[in-house]
Length: 151
Image (cartoon, one colour):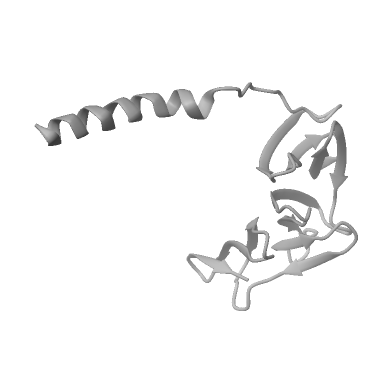
């Protein structure tokens, strides 16, 4: 009898879980002005959002903070995408080098400096997807199969 009561309580809690997680949330569209496409990839506890957008000039990363979009382009890169942001505002992502010797490399951006992330032994790409509040970065590289990394 006790196990039946536990099952009923558990089932009731599971049934309420989606409502509890979804209450108070609404969907908001995030569109970089003038962009043909916009994708949001990461958000921190302050509500800062990072992602990428496409316009007539190509593919760019962005930071959306309190109603303002800031373009993130690694200097000299053909394209840039931002995937993760921590509570300190440090941003990680990937950029493409120009066509000669084309390679995709990860980056860390601290608001003033870009640091390239290139896993030793990667054959054609390193992509940084996430960064935690301790500054640890995770992502993927190829050698020759895809492998995860933590830096």
